[in-house]
Image 1 (cartoon, rainbow over the protein chains, first blue to last red):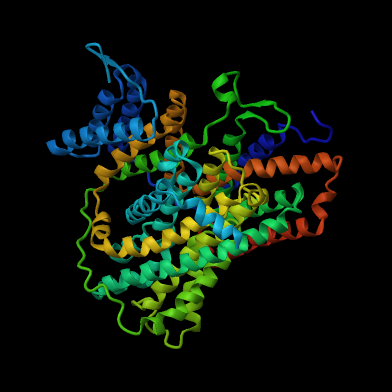
Image 2: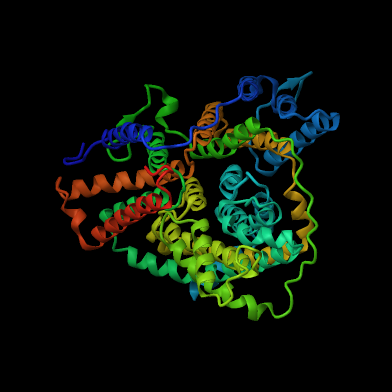
Length: 120
Length: 495
């Protein structure tokens, strides 16, 4: 290490100390407490997170074109959409457009799978 | 002069030129949707920038930057909710105008004022930035450290309404996140927990896309508003005859105010908008209509916030230190494509910089056309149901972060950042300082350490005239912010 360099630990220590100090200071002073989360909302947000993690775990196995419409439909349902058009047409269309855009427009490799010998 | 020729020559290819209207249209749509800000929008399209040519990617991002700077006014006028924070001052007179059936007029004024402010601002930018860059060629690590501190201080104190301690906490979280990986000077691993994934550090795109995009999606899921947006009949879209005489001086004056406030690193469009509004009112002979639907209020705010965005780009391009949240993102984009912003950019890559300026001038001209031609469509965009929009944003966030290097770890980063963004937002912590901490933190750290190394461990370099002046300005900004908060109300949060 170069002489007189405060070192790699300098910034983390500063930030850490600052966080502790500001955290404590934050306790003082009047501040409207943030609204408590309703149980209903907590369940929805939790479900949203769970679907996200499931998608991330399975997208490489299922392939982008299969996993994504399912993911999108699930999130749309969680957001309260109930119409068939929204839950089926929108996810499929969205997946198709983004697939074409990313794969052929930007030449980005999206996770693929093989069905009946065909890689999609 | 040669810079201009280079710049326009650089963008004179169809593949680049086509990106400008695409970016502008995207930007107008993004800015018009409440809850979706320019920062989020630009973050969502960062993965595209990654795969495009540098100038093409810049043209897209800058188009979004410019388009959204105008269209934040649309929901501000129609439903009293600014589409972007910069349009906050536009609601003051814009919404009352809409209530009186003059929404169309307000929208047209917003558009013209935005384009004038932006175009003149871009012109000023193209003159100011090279001058600053040339001057900054003499800057050393001491000066850059001071400016970085200034940017951080200003954005925490003036640029945000939250409690100062919360802003500081956000910024320090940014520091810690960006510290993950190998330290830039000594190569020492930090926060890597021994894993190779973390040794590379946290990729910027997944972090930003998660923090701003996915985080907002979580917030929207919690709110789950099922209300339909109210229908508005805009009335006529003309500004009335003699608008140049009535509103011209306001627009030009506000452009100057806006550009000037934008120059200070860390000050964003909303501050410029409010300042121009206040100054316009102060110099107005007839003040009675302000707050009740005076067109000058709308013109002032919109001209200023666009000009301010241009002003913010001066330090972004010339010094490599961002002037607001969106330009911090732009800096991130430049780093991703391998361009190092700063004084040397003008000597080493002037066609890129001037190409960017040329893009914006063309972009603002196009904004006028696209904005006016499609105004009835843009109005409809305001009412896009959140419950259909945000799932789409989620998918884009996830694919976008995956597209960076086809690594699932990045998607996990995005999800983690999304949770962080959600938790921070719902507890009143501002997100912009996190972004600034991530982008400016390394600048501050590296220059501080280099200064210490060069000065053999003494702090004397901080006492050099320019460095000291800048640090004092930062301290003054902080003191002013504390004073302003105390004055605002003794019962509201101060620290």
